[in-house]
Image (cartoon, rainbow, N blue to C red):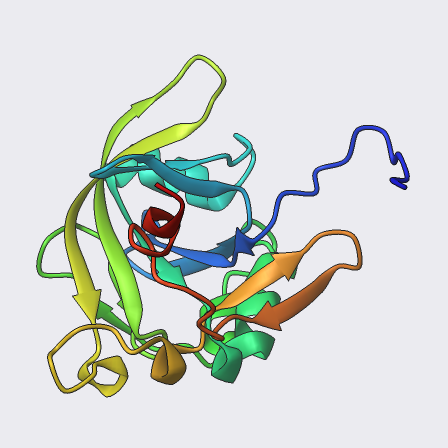
Length: 185
C-alpha cells in the first residue's frame, strides 16, 4: 500500500551543487544549490532566485562553476548554502574553502571539491532558470582510478534528502548501466 503526501519537492537523489562565481570586486563566492542538473548532454540548468548574489554574479560575469559537494566537506558546503554573500561578504573565508581561477571560464574552482563543471552562461530562460554551457570538466587526480576515470569510492559525492533535510553519501554500486537490462531482451 502507498501513502499519499501531496505536492512535495521530493526528487531523489538531489545532487548538492556548489556554484562558484566572482563578485564585482573580484572576490570569490559560492552557494549551495540543490535544484539544478543536466539540461542537455553539454549544458546545465540552475534554478536560482533572482535575489541570490550568485545569480547577479553569473549574469555580470557570464560564467560559473558547478562543483559537487562530497562527504569530506559537508560542513563548509552546507555553510555556503545557509549564509548569503549579500549579508556576509566574508563567507568564503569563513567556510574554509580555497579557490583557484578556472583556466576555461571567468569563475573560481573550489580547491577542496574534486569534481567541477566549468560553464559559460548561455541564457536565463523565461522562468529565470540559468542555462550554462559546459566548457570543461575539471577533476582532481586524487579521485581518479588507475585508468584515469573518476573513482566513485574515492570521490564520495553527497545528495540532499529533502524529506528530512539530510545529506547522504552516494557510492554503492548495484548494477551496470546500459548492460544489465539487456538480460530482459
